[in-house]
Length: 109
Image (cartoon, helix red, strand yellow):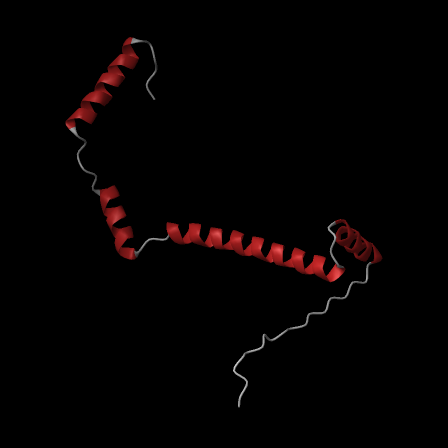
């Protein structure tokens, strides 16, 4: 009978450090966090990897949200080149504001 349970495949990773200062710093940080050197390195690497993935994913989603389809782009350009006539209330409000500025000594911009 075949074994129906799947065993997780374990992958080994080897790191070599030649700088004694780096080794002592890592060992001291591991000691302060009550971890082994391997546990500390694994935790630190995983946290940094997740941070980078979150950062890159955030940037990617921001960029993707700024990208529009060619059809939408054409509509935006058409609206910019062919603006609608402003509403009468808006035109009146702008005229009243301009007159108020002149009357009260404010320069127009």
